[in-house]
Image 1: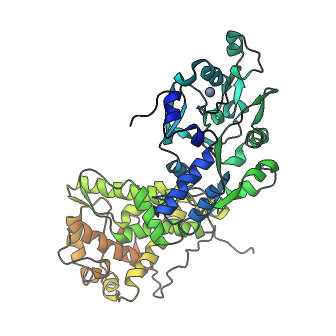
Image 2: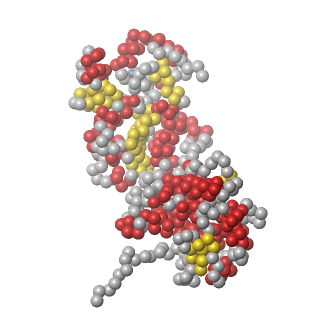
Image 3: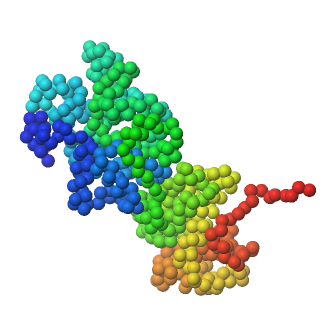
Length: 494
Ligand SMILES: [Zn+2]
């Protein structure tokens, strides 16, 4: 594409003065959004589960030319949504070449550019910004300063140029001016010190700011967007009132509403395309992994205020695949077929993502995570086998049968043992297992049935992964009752 290289050429192009001189960023994203809505295009591709909730509110905020904030817990795609706003920017934006704050060639705000244009007129060189260059993101922390965000007076610059300290020529620009004519996102807004929030507000409201006591006129053109944890944001005193007042829309994000949506997000985000071996992830494995997050979000042992990020099932799935990959490599197998034992092996990707309440702390992260996996297996098992009689399989164990299914053991070796359990391999059709199925896939399915029976306490399983009759088996099924262990044995006083 031949883009105009001088101000004179620019005037005669599509980037005319009439079109660009007063067009703000918010007008630009609004116009481009309107065109997308008219064409019926998907507006935020890759953002799953928000079509009826977050997306319409987001569209309204943009159409209203609001600065807005996304309120939500960890791992609810807030940053992703904010970044996706760049897709609503023009592909190329002309600015005065060399300008630190990307001045509009038709209405420059910095003195350097005004002088440059006055001297060079139509020969003033023009440069361009691509969409991604116009997005600046900052994680708010209490130690962010005015200098970081807005700028600082640079005495050396002043001395060299012979400028007064209050001259804008002496300012070393911070992040916000550098985001001029673009989108500036501040994550975790409540963590920003009150003084900085006031600075932000002044810029938004008046285009004026004080740097070290020197007033500076800086009428920036920025679309400001924010994110925050809802409780932090609503807590009294965390956000200065005038700033809150200038945030046009508050949009609440949420975790996936259904297991299917969760699975879709995890599928999209998890690194599952491994080079090398063929990968076959059974549907029940995806369901178990996703259910762990769903159950954790409801669990009273886990802190509700921090939430359970969607990154949990994503990391778990990646770890599950890796454990299965390791087994396939060790046993020289051609197919990676994850098993439930791989989910238990993925414990390191669960524990770090759960903020435990007091009761959870007492039980320990590992125990809480194991319990979540067991419940997820029980629930998933029921969706396939609830009405199927498994008595024959249970009986084999009751009659003294035992089998060890190590997560490192190869499929062929395990299949020999599984064949001894009468009736087991015939029960796998609800999982879509065909008679000529690959060994690795067949073994995973059979192991899932045994894990399901174990999750319902119909058969036992030792720490060494030996399945056997459950010594204290309760024959009455109580699938979703959580394991209740007293914190310590209470002895009555004498
Ligand atoms: Zn400039």
